[in-house]
Image 1: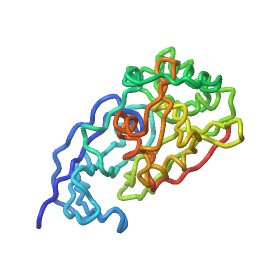
Image 2 (image 1 turned 90 degrees about the horizontal axis):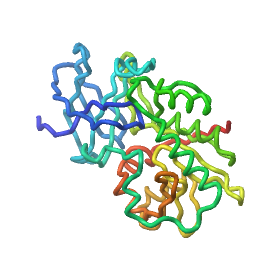
Image 3 (image 1 turned 135 degrees about the vertical axis):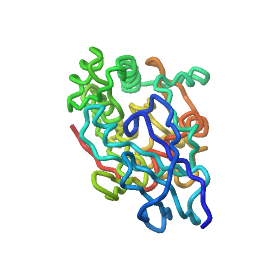
Image 4 (image 1 turned 180 degrees about the vertical axis):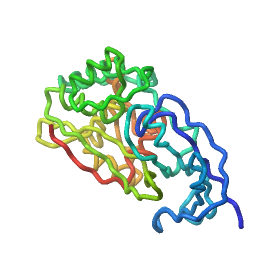
Length: 294
């Protein structure tokens, strides 16, 4: 049988939080075949359940998969090391090379672009709070915060008791911003493929929408640090942003990116080049959006 090359990687942090680059893992095949996904995923793998660690290798790849598609694995033991009780997650990731899975939490790349000239008080408040989150967040404790209160999360982060990822960032922004907000849960389909192991069609994410003066909701992501994304001067909701990416309209977008409490204007193409995981991992067309108003 013809073999196809996929990259299989262990990630160093939980979903939607990157500190270290993923490390490739040697894969072997000697057990039962598991077919993952529908006609859209088109991926067939083999898993050795007897191994101490999950061992995975694609054994058949057909139209719909690409050379840069990835399988990434978060073990249950890894989550336990962070103080979390979670199943293991095997995540299928399309159209991105392993070297592109990174993040710059401080958004230092933004300093090379133009500061925005039309900030408003709510944008300033978002940018200032986002910088406070990044300045306080330190993963050296090795424990992921599990509190559901923004003020408590900030206190624990400042005292280096734990760190936060996208969910914590969004809770802090929702609780501490004066502007009306709602949390967005971006879910992908999850399938049980073994005891305490789930397969995700794409990576889950938590973000935020803010209420504009006209009453509409628009996306502001405290993890990636953009206060808004616009098309033709109108701020987009999370679903509108996903639709714009799906239909190839990134060149029509403008992002308000935060850096050290200031806002910078980046074109859509520039932003997606600087943060390639936005389109490939998080704001993907398969996502189901759920909203929480706190």
